[in-house]
Image (cartoon, rainbow, N blue to C red; front, side, top):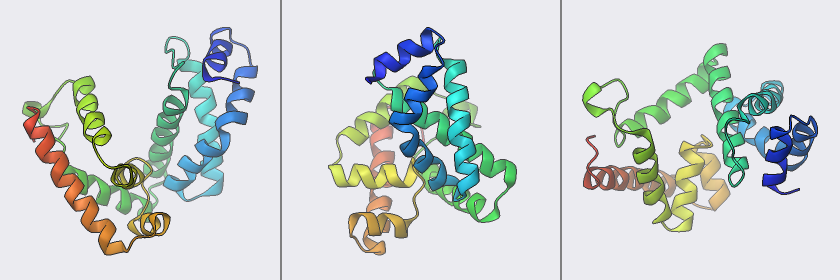
Length: 186
């Protein structure tokens, strides 16, 4: 079933929307949740909560052409919230480590002088990522969207850990330079 057809089921408030969503995206959403929580039961809960959240958000949202991205974002946020709630120390430390890495190239949301239009900022990051080589883009996304560890990324792409670390360092530096060039204050 196509994404737009599933979204239409949500709009009609047809419960088959959840079944079709689960069939098409369930494994991928579970994988996103498990990658963050590292806990089978919590990942299942996050996947199931994603369906409820999608039910509540569609309508008014109409993610006909980006349904998986819409669902993955919900799953990711639910998973991160579960980690915060459960205060899983190892995961919390890992998330803090990633936050610290990204602070080098993204403005702080608490600094009133650095507040920017979220849509323009998102578009700038997307443009930066689109201009990267496929492997570098995937390394960046695996680290900062899926929260994969350096060792997981190195295995996935058959690279050394030092190569992954160096690539990520250079990508953050390039992102910072790109955002500054685009007029964002870092």
